[in-house]
Length: 627
Image 1: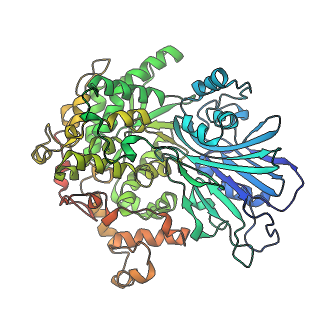
Image 2 (image 1 turned 90 degrees about the vertical axis):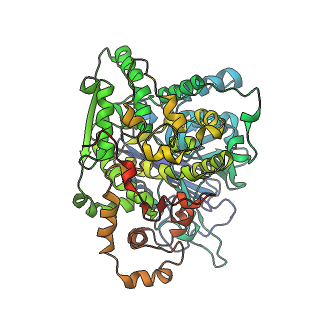
Image 3 (image 1 turned 180 degrees about the vertical axis):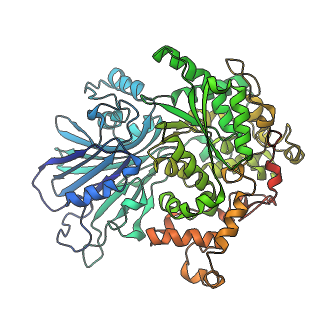
């Protein structure tokens, strides 16, 4: 969590820092309004984070769940501005080095750079080397932390150029004290896909004419509550940076995403082989193995997570032999009800990869009755009321909770559906161009939906999730493939056979990995199941029936009056909304919902497979490995 503020004091003061050993990683920062040269420091309202060390610490500690390995706060005054930062650390790279803790402070001849960041920079070593060799950078690193390179790149290249060089998942805020201008510069950015979150809002008005007091940034909404005007809170969009001078600026602008007429496959010289795609994915997996702590992977039993396992396992075994000289099994985690599609498919995959000798498979079984009481806590951590998302978040919470007992990081299969037309409603698409445009649309929502859930549910338990399918180079390659190869055949969906959704991806990984292991055919060709469906075919209907008893008809009749923004249409939606409003009242506009109430309803074509309540025919999800 990050926090920084600016006040009317021209005296430059030294930075004050506090540190304590903690158990769970997050970021919060606050800075004074850089437009207002004479802020009213006597204004009433909540304590200003940069003014009160107690308020800063309290706000930072709200994010303890994101970082169990240490928290640190820093505050300072530069010219007329005050700033403050707080950070909780989940130590995965260079974990025992306290110099790797943030906020990180880089002191140069005529300026100081203060950084708080959340995420992982996979190219940190090569980027730092480039700064030295190509740009003449000679400032030494003080730790092995991957995020430290953000400060060095910013110092040498400037914010916009630096963020374009980062390969990873990240959200960060930088404050730069510049002696030449005697001003405090602010720069904030979020990764291209939206894997890591970043919000900001303006503090409550401090003058009669409504001029705001400053800005507060945070990894999660909960640390903004009480410190900002709720109506001003926004999420920094994926692939954007922010400065007070420019506002939000898109820096990630690949042709496949930005150009409606993008069609490289029509060029005779455009040639992407299946081996090119497989090799790009292997590199994406290997890149995300960067860690100095134990890690594992989520195995849902769906084809996406099985493909991750297919490529990860040989790499992991080689790594163990090379670095540790052992053959310790890789920790692997699955969640679901007894005999559910996900659990049975995951068991089959584990056996095909070599069984317990190579995979330490932990299954978190659950019953509907045990999870209902968890829903308020899950909505609080999810910071959304999007029903389709919360349905999947419930089992995801249990999965992350179990995994966090053994590891600090996991790889997951998120993102494949948005690259290879993985959802069942793609069976109703009529043309390849429709498929391509729909993939672009749902990719653009990842930071609000799938990745939002992945981040919140794992980080609620001090666990980091990495998503190899959403590697930017792999994504660029995948989205340059002719979408005619991603067209879905309805009959193949019904028969679990070739031609169904994601056939291209399934065929790419139909063969053996480097150790001769293959994905079992019933798993390779099973139906796409959202996590709320795969954990048990009747799970969603059981959940909805229970919730229906908690919301009255009278509440539904008044829903349009109680919740005029994003009005709930079902009792399930109203129940989640009611919990959200208890914690984040006034921030309802921050939640981005699917048009029409679900992912399928916003497509350019009409599909009868889904309603607001979910998949109509759950029998499509069953497969041969179930009892």
